[in-house]
Amino acid sequence: VDDSSLTQAISTLRKMLKDSTKSPQYVKTVPKRGYQLIARVETVEEEMARESEAAHDISQPESVNEYAESSSVPSSATVVNTPQPANVVTNKSAPNLGNRLLILIAVLLPLAVLLLTNPSQTSFKPLTVVDGVAVNMPNNHPDLSNWLPSIELCVKKYNEKHTGGLKPIEVIATGGQNNQLTLNYIHS
Image 1 (spheres, helix red, strand yellow):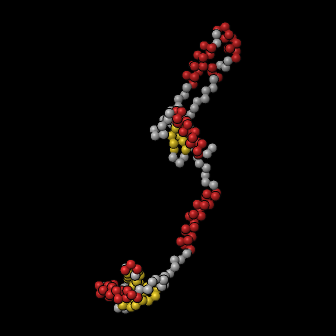
Image 2: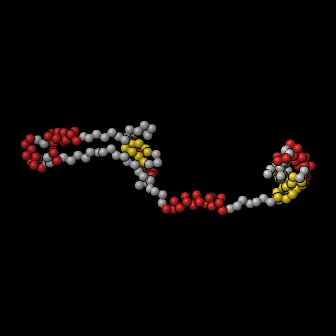
Image 3: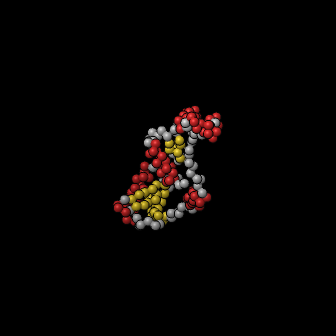
């Protein structure tokens, strides 16, 4: 039985019982588990025995009672099936080996990439030296020689405010496009 046919059967049962899914009286949906029968169940042994005796008395006239008595089952031997409250929960089958393998690969693959690969080291080429501080730029970066006066001015101003141990040991210059320049000050 697949999930859709089970869902359809429960839906049909709810329609027949006029049971709401919002406030159920008979069948409750248990999320990620299945369904549960929550109807109140009562034992009706005595009532069923009385009804069967009454039906037996009405359908059999007194004159034919001898034959009926010999073929009938004594009332003490009447077997009544008493419905027990049932917790009907459909368990979804455990993920098969293929699904488990896919999950394992999905977890291990990103970990392997992170652990086994080294980020590429960016190599720099020297651009200039300002007040004993090397100004470098990435090798794969467009030329920043047009920006040298601005770079020198910015590094000098920065060094005036940051002397001694606060002075940077290196500056990495990037940008240049859209009239924007970025200077990254590297401290020890």
